[in-house]
Amino acid sequence: METSVSLNEKEPLVRFYQLVDGFEPRRADKSVGGTLPVRALRHCGPSASASQFGWYVFLPHRFRLLWDGNEVFYQLEDMPGFEPLRTINYPGLADSFDAAAPEHAKGFSPPFLTASVQTGSVQVWPGLMARTAPGWSLLVRPVANFPRRSGYELFEGIIETDQWFGPLITNLRLTRTDMPVEFDNDIPFMQVQPLQQGHYDDHLLSRFEIGKGAESLGTDDWQRYMETVVKPNTDPNRRRGTYAPKMRKSESQRTAEDQAVR
Image (cartoon, rainbow, N blue to C red; front, side, top):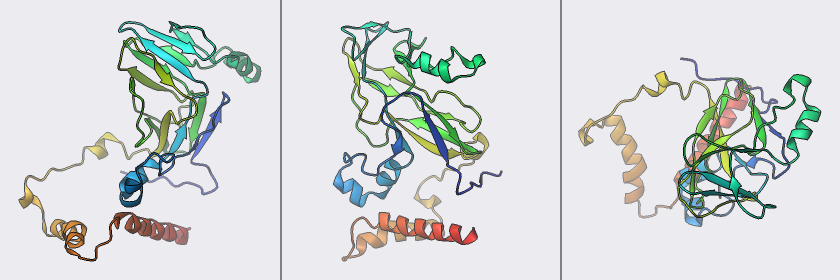
């Protein structure tokens, strides 16, 4: 199965379209805005790599949600109290959207918040659309390694944004009742990460094996274990955090080889 897709180096991997004013999407940060513990940042390469994989997406407006166990209520910044949520739009977006849209698209501006048929769930659109290079999709997920406020959980979803072009939405599930849940516009709301199509294909992901017990490890497996675990822990002069420099060196080598091919 072919899973590699070439990408013109002058072509953006993803192009965001921001229809509502607010903080622009930005490259994810390995320190997660300074919230990742220094020990993890310095010595845990996997955490830093996962943190900086993709882009942060922000909400254009602050708002609050309240769930009574049956119905969801919302409150925007300029509202004196909560109102039942059905579907609401960003203030003024319908007019600006229709002014720019061709005739057949007028009246179809995406909604901001929509109450789901599933109890306690809400669909949220942070004001963005996105298109990816051919063969690439976007994984929409919570911000990696970021301690979110209690009261809700984000669903994750993979959108094939090279073909499907529409609002970059996500869904959240409220997890507490009778207490407002705050949503800010100055911290990342979600993270989007690029995936090559084919890498999450069911036929590919079904190709896995399970070894039972330590006796299932072969000679090559034990050699790798010796290099990864045994030698570093028996070296009296061992330096902590050797994984991250080793992975950076491997990445540099791959980049150099890729440039040489081009």
